[in-house]
Length: 63
Ligand SMILES: [Zn+2]
Image 1 (cartoon, rainbow, N blue to C red):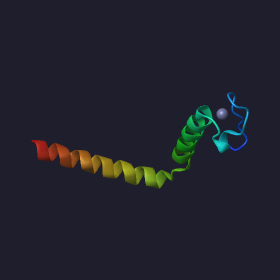
Image 2: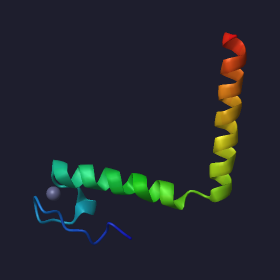
Image 3: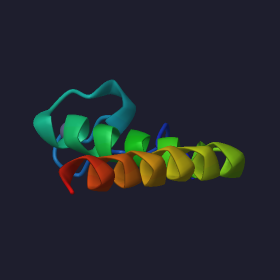
């Protein structure tokens, strides 16, 4: 789903133009959703691995 054609309920302009705070909030939220939707599964696994390693390292340091 693309946000390019979404029209704001508050200002009736395309949300992608960000003319009002509602537009900007929606645009930001949709861009974040796009970011996560476009994430490569391999990148996600790599990220998870790094996270687990970091947590393990932290747990090791505190004990
Ligand atoms: Zn708006």
